[in-house]
Image 1 (cartoon, rainbow, N blue to C red):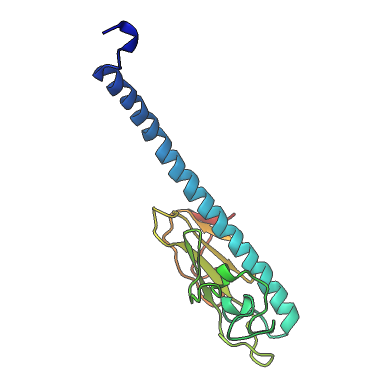
Image 2 (image 1 turned 90 degrees about the horizontal axis):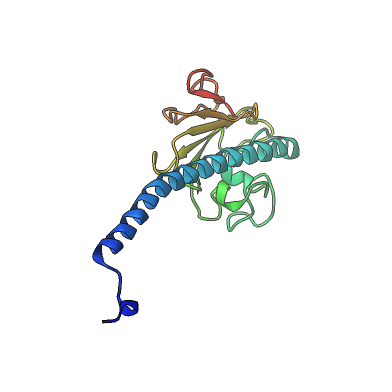
Length: 183
């Protein structure tokens, strides 16, 4: 057989495969960390959007803050026009309206809304609220948990152990210090 027509030896192929495995072993963990960071940034930004939408809701409808995330979302089958029941201040994914979810999920995080009254009115307004974002699969979709309330400050628990809040706000469950602090 002429020298030009010769193929690769098994040793050469194994060497190339080993190099590819080393590159993969380095790239996959970095990719996962990047994915976690992107999910966490998305969760924090979604909480900022919720806080902004709630301020708008508070000033527009004269009944305090919304009682549910769906009340901040777009009109749906339950309410055809923008009103206090569907204010159209938040997108359908974060509000849960798009998928009909009581606890919306976006970018690997679920959003739980806490308010004193699920159906506020001018006589019984919600003067406080809190929203907690937790990873759907801790360690897989993100590590940190987040909270925002009527003060508008997003808090982050890097350890991911605090996963609830109180209708009066984040302060009771989210004491600043240690792993918990503002973003």
